[in-house]
Length: 182
Image 1: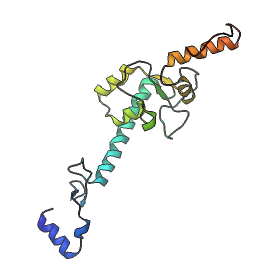
Image 2 (image 1 turned 180 degrees about the vertical axis):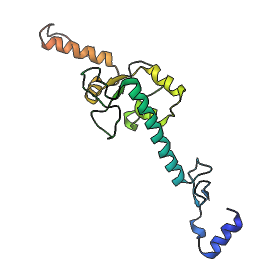
Image 3 (image 1 turned 90 degrees about the horizontal axis):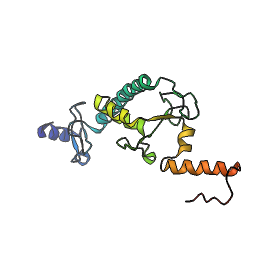
Image 4 (image 1 turned 135 degrees about the vertical axis):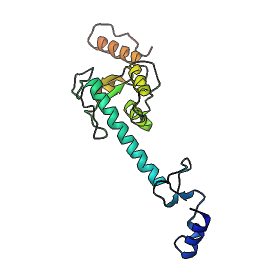
């Protein structure tokens, strides 16, 4: 919008000068004078948000189809055998696949505090060969929610060794003087 048009809108009372901020511009998408996100140069906050939701929905659809092609629609948990769903539908659904990091390769990182796990990584990244290759290099395990929680995230070998030694001790296979904290 040219400065003359802005001045005309202010004079006609259509726009109050006090409501104009430095981040306000004409959106290339909706063609309205609106506030922009600081990192966006051409779209207003509303149009940017809508486009981002469409982008993520398309990514989710493409990645879920890849997961179905790769693992099947209802793969079993690799530990307990429980039948799982690749498509999530409901957040926190215990029947949804949990992708487990089986390798030390850490390009796709899990951050439970931010809700960022392998599936969210996929949704945030376009479905292109580069990212499919990164996904396959991780060689994720398929786990249910309970097994994923029980397996822990860090020092799993040490944790499982302690569990195994505890079982041997409680079943009477080894003596009671075993220290499990070493």
